[in-house]
Length: 258
Image (tube, one colour):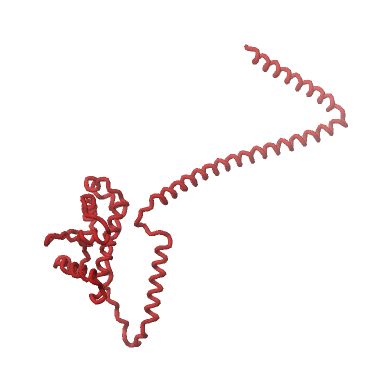
């Protein structure tokens, strides 16, 4: 037994002796009837204090459990915050931003209301004629995650999801620019647009009748992109996803939207 352990044992024995002395003194005092009443009151107060201490310990335990639960919630919120920041930083370029869809809907409603206001009232016994849809331009739908994952790795290469949908956006840009010219009257076109209009007509075949299509020149001219080996690889991916098909003839490759 070392010196420290000997001191601890000595202190423990001295404490026990002191406690026995106090008990003997209290036993002697308890024989006095006047002082016995005081001791009983002290006992009641000590018991009340012990009860309060027990309740305080239970309350501290509840608060400790609550604190642990709050810490767990903080960790969950921090994980959710990290996920939100990740989503915000990695949002695909083709996804609509806040307010765009609402603005489009409001613009469409305003246009409909304007047409309804400007149009003359139709006779009650005559149905309103249905407006033709010939000027409606078809756009290619963007590739979703499931479709992108279904593309074989050898075909996908290093092309990312965002890059493939950026190609879809470029094709849509070229299609919109081309068919805005196609749907205009020749009288309203300038010389450059008339030449383009004539080229578009010359490129049509029986296979493209009733379909929207573009050629490499359209992608270069309207989307400012060159149809190189990498872009052709993305066109093959879009063919795999049933977004377009190719029709060759007359030295041209026509990309028809499906």
